[in-house]
Image (cartoon, rainbow, N blue to C red; front, side, top):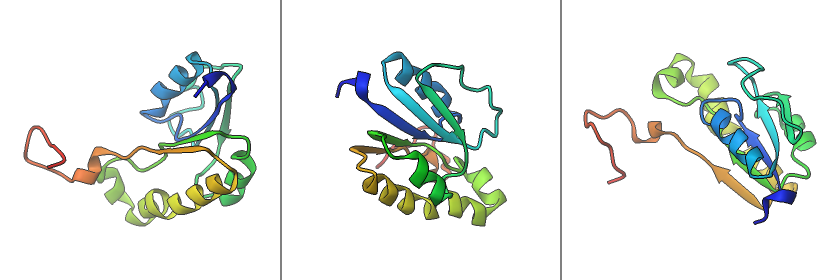
Length: 136
């Protein structure tokens, strides 16, 4: 894929992983749209002419239907990312991590997004007493 003409829609683009990924995408010539709640501040991502930041919630389907058209790739990073945070409000966490996922995929499909990248967290493995956790 040639990056010069590709638009990447990044959910959670101002979060822990997104704040590192988005500048790398911009440096490679992608146009980037970020949808994030900006809980860590609105200055996490430096200004860039090919960057559009939108403050919003991935559970807002109307916002997704408005902001996704024209995107070639979705990178889905928005989530409650660790077990302790998840347990603070399981209902909210489930709403964000599980319930919002299927509508996001469906809207991306309806908008003819060509590639959808879903990033998970180490929390899928659960808490372990082992120093190194493998998929086995």
